[in-house]
Length: 275
Image (cartoon, rainbow, N blue to C red; front, side, top):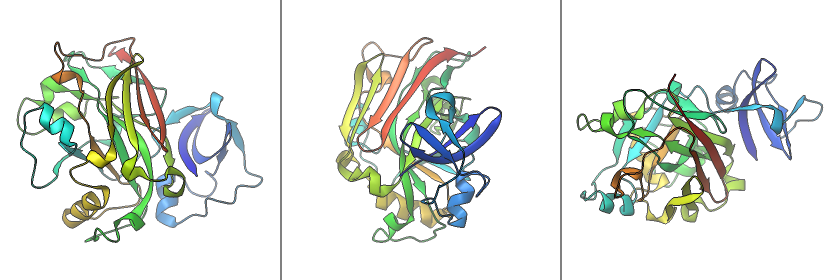
């Protein structure tokens, strides 16, 4: 099942994708996050309004998460290209909900810096509240998966050892197009991830290169915080980012960037300059 959030004709809603349509389930809960929290039945959609996917604006699948937990330095390939040591524990930082954009919307290069980099990642969306979740039980807490582009303003990321400023410029976090339920996503542990810039492959990996697996991340994060329905864990990026290329490759206005994950979909965004 593919779930999404959208806006259409002045209406903001959420629903389930059915072919070239989205079935509007907004009458059942005010948001997809609320639906996950309430355990709303997502399978029965007869008689509900529909919108053509071609006519809606895609929003981040979860526009209003309580938390976005980001994991840095989690692909061995990326750790090695940066000349860093393999971390003993996950490297955690946070992203704010209002820095996100949906599929098809523009990533904004800020006026403060031109060092805007791409980071193709798998996002894990939590489906139910959890604390002290074990690795063995972790996947039972997953509502689904999505693509993420953790757009990074490197200059600001490197001001200090704390990554947060460079990860939270407005409209830099691409998220979508859908939340794909685990049964449809299939074997994400061995899924392939590709990030393309203007059609050229910049990043390519399989998720078995993760240092800390999805269950390990859920267990770790649920130890220091309560995971809530709709929370998003972004699992890290692989090698090939623009910052470590010679010369560096930064996203610029007019670019098209895509993050494709097998079984999950393709997130596509243009790039524009801050007005």
